[in-house]
Amino acid sequence: MSKSIIISKNTCPMNLGINILSGKWKLQIIWNIQKNKVVRFNELQKMLGDITTKTLTSQLRELEENQIIKRTVFPEVPPRVEYSLTEIGESIEPILNSLCDWGKAYLGKK
Image 1: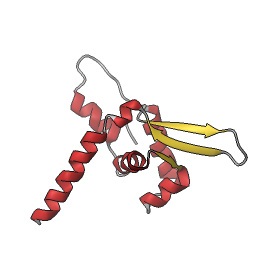
Image 2: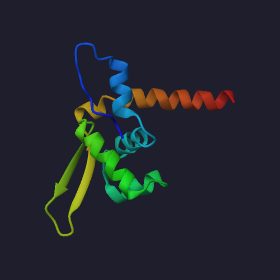
Image 3: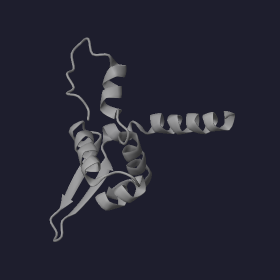
C-alpha cells in the first residue's frame, strides 16, 4: 500500500515516483491496461494470475487516487466497470517499455 503522498518544494521526484508505483502489482496492472487500452476487472485479474480480488481492488484504488488510471462505471445491470490509463498514466509508457527492454537484455546475459 502506498504511503500518503505529501508534496513540498523539497520532495524528491525519484521518491515520489517510487512511492506511487511501488508494490508487487502496480507496474503489472499499468502494463496490462496500457497494452489493452481498456480492461474490465475480471479480465485484468485473469491477466495477472495470482492476485486476490482484495489486493487488485486496493491497488486499483491507489492508482485511481494517484490519477494514473481512470475507472468508468456504466449504469447497467449488472454494473460494468472499465479501467483505462489517464493522460498521466499514459506518460509512463516509455518507462515501462524501457524496463521491458532492460529485462529482455538482462535475461539474454544470464
